[in-house]
Amino acid sequence: MDITSPVTLDFNNTEIAFKNKSDKDLNKAYWLFKMVSSNALIKIGTPITEFSLNIGLPIQGIIKNTIYKQFCGGESIQDCSSAIQELGKGKVTTILDYSVEGEESEASFDATCQEILNTVESAKNNSLISFCVFKPTGLGRFDLFAKIDAKEALTDLEKEEYRRVWNRCDLICKACFNADIRVLIDAEHSWIQETIDDIAREMMEKYNSNKPIVYNTYQLYRADKLASLKADFAYAQNQNFHLGAKIVRGAYMEIERERALKLGYPSPIQKDKPSSDEDYNLAINFCLDHIDQIGLMAGTHNEQSCRILAEELESRNIPHNHPNIFFAQLLGMSDNLSFNLASAGYNVAKYMPYGPVKAVMPYLFRRAQENTSVAGQTGRELGLIMKELKRRKSNR
Image 1 (cartoon, rainbow, N blue to C red):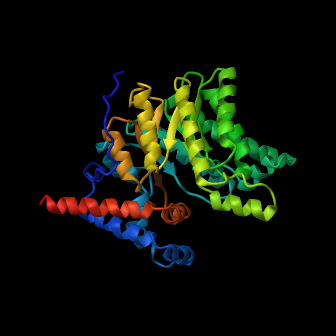
Image 2 (tube, rainbow, N blue to C red):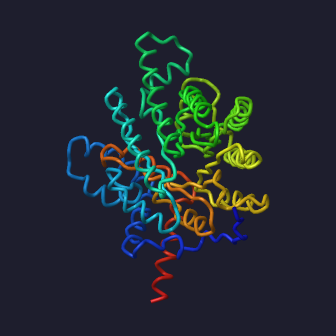
Image 3 (cartoon, rainbow, N blue to C red):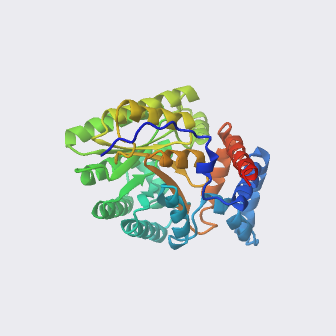
């Protein structure tokens, strides 16, 4: 494998970032991020939107043409095909993410499992789909995970219920193994994460003997997750399998801190952002130290983190397109990172959520809230869009 010659990454290169976006697309994105940048609007608009959908007000069309179109690929796998092709033109692959949340019945868990298996089938026949993904609480009850995490005794019915959850996870991981498609197991709240980690470890031990297929997610805004990563790798070495590690900062910080305060236990969250950043960088470097035995996905919208990883690959003489190293961002966000990295020869994937509009609204609300809470995120998006529109105008 040839090493791509050193490239100076310019995350301000909007021509590459928005190459496949029309002026109309950019203007629509501008007004959407402008709207999202208002904390007050998001706080008021979220419950109003939920209420309107629940009582059947005809607002789905508005949602579908605005926030949904920005952050989602479509309502079905087939609907996502044009968005997958558009990303592919910029050398960015897709992670198909069935983002239906909040279901609690066995029938819905079975249906979600089948839909994820459908994404595996699609990925098998499409080189532009590089990963599949599932959220464990899409396959089993949150409260069941919580009860197991709390080390409470399960009833016979609950033991049987958990066996079905485990089997759904196994069915997906086995299908990915057979199709030679990587699969990401998403992280969730700390009070159910230990059970998820146990499942992920079992799946990796079962299916990662030759290379990383199954990936667990490590949220480095938690103070204990760097240690977890190292412990899992030591176990993988001992049991002779590859570790799959998706390294992120995290997505549930405020909820975690509030719950810890309310229930009177130490918060699992790092004391400050610099501590999260330090552990994130240490985790990335740890994975690179063992890159022949670890599959690394760096999930981040942080420009500095992307640059640090790219520079580490250069300094270590690791090929940009090493099969065990991927950058990842969410669809509709940070195109300046995704497309400039891909243009420089790095492996890049975008999470592409899909599903019925009403069913993916919890996901969309989180995206909107995250954009308002991450310092400078929406301002950065707006500035890049304005820069590109100005560039295009001056070139006409």
